[in-house]
Length: 460
Ligand code: PFF
Image 1 (cartoon, rainbow, N blue to C red):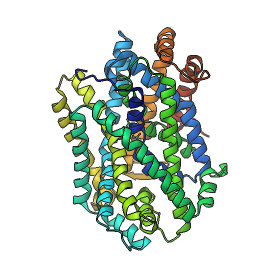
Image 2: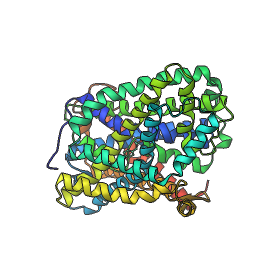
Image 3: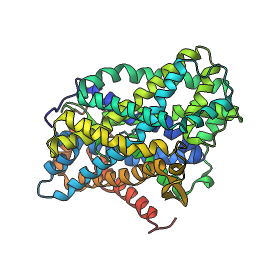
Image 4: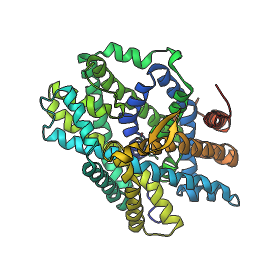
């Protein structure tokens, strides 16, 4: 990669990678899928997936990236010359980045609309039902849906054209801690004014009778999505990492931060949902956009916290979309020999057009909303949901499994040990041997079983 950069500091990498991981997956998606899957047991399975599959695979990605010092397609090639099949993993990653960005940017666009609505005081004195109604109307407005999607892709393109390391690193250092602080304040407030006890009981109940096979698949798929795994984003970021950083410790920090944000997001929304039965959350896809304006309206300083929160959410989304586009762009630069600006503008435009049907399929265009592409557990999915399902439940797990197999079996133990141990500073238990067992056996077998199950080859 011609414009190959380096993170300025070790902490810069942790924050940029955390910026990629922390995004709409934590703030928008996790609260609604955990809600749809009855909370507790789903959350526990999700945590197990993060620990046994997510963390080992993130270590693998960062390690392969740093070792090869290349983009995903080139990295596999460089580390296993003569075995061209591994390049497929890189291509799959590029395709995943393309698909995810096309619908992710639609939701990211919603955060911009909500930032502006909060700044202009749109929600002042609105009833809960009116807030929900206005969200549904917003989903039904084709110009706004496509317009914000366009604006968000454009913002992403602007950052990626300029190169990421300096810009992102500088901003994430301020904005990630700020996002954290606001989330904690909101959680405390919402737990106090809402039904905090009920929210905790829901989030941590252990009634396994509610768990279905689909919940397990969804938990694993989401572990990949939320940690930005399975498509080479962490691999690309790892390739900018200096040799004196401790990969294990960095990955652990990123994963813990990511998980905390997801849980805190639930503890902001659930107390309010349980305290206000009149809040209509049948459209669970939008709970963050229907519960939060309601919280802000009633809380002290809500008029200040509200715009700040939605702007930070937009920023959290931007640090994720940047990493999605960067994977596609780094491939186009290296393999197709395009220059960075052409690569970014061209791929960004194609992704924009590809995402237009997603933008219109949540109610803006009747026939598109009714059009179903795929089905999940017998339930038909519209265009938007189909791509989300395809990417998080199939493409990322398959990509992740292949990365695990590569790091586990195709790389030499000597190389892995060296990468794992340079710069190592802490956590004696997190050593190359433990990781090697997880990456060779536990992670790929877990994903493989889940895929077999999905294909209907095994039944549970
Ligand atoms: N991890 C991001 C989130 O949780 O919002 C989404 C994402 C970003 C997925 C980058 C994959 C990726 F490569």
